Amino acid sequence: MYIATAILLAAVAAASAWSLGDVPYAFIFSAVAGVLVELLYSCAVDKRARVSLSAAITGMIIGGVAPFNAPLLPLLLADTAAIMSKFLIKAKGRNVFNPAALGLLTGLGLFSLGDEWWAASGLALYGIVIPFSVALVFAAYKSRRLIASFSFIAFTFAAAVLLDYNPTSMVAGLLGLNYFFAFIMVAEPKTSPYRPLGQVAYGGGIALLYLLFGAATLPYPFFAALLIGNAALALHRVLVRRHDARIT
Image (cartoon, rainbow, N blue to C red; front, side):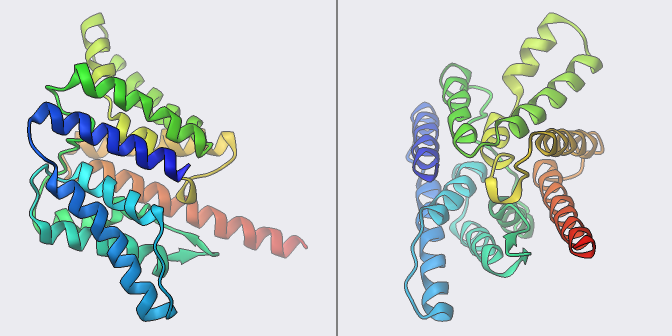
């Protein structure tokens, strides 16, 4: 799953960078920074070197969502917050928050930078990016979270149709969906449910929160919706385990 995701993220970023006609230095820096932060933390705390593909993927997601030419300091802060959350913010041995979303909210928020999603949702890149974005379905499939991804897409698209029902808006709605977010971030396996019904509720709930925050013009609606969904799932897991413990 991690290998497939890394390859797909690199392909999406390469296609977008080619269309933009520039080298994605920030994307490359963020991927490397994610690995180095994890390496330094493991050496300092665990007294052993640890390098994982997961850390590189987290950095790639951050680099693909932050502005294309983002300053390096916000990216480094985002990577550090993301990697630290994997080690320090846990419930019952599981990650509570999606690391990339938490890192982006921290790094971009503190420096008042926007979330650009350049790697897969640039308005001028439909001819190239949409096919690559839809290919990300393979990453969600490998993580067994396709239902969560499609639930998010279905709820978001249904809302667009209800608000403005005509063929043109339906096509625009499909093109404008954030497939990168749906198939990569919503489908992150450690912070999303495994059971099908849980995935439907999870993806749909995140979609509704995103639409609500977007309507209220709140900053970073994608990150806020996902992190609240993460927190709700973590709380549910804790309550279920306590309930099961009382029964036994």
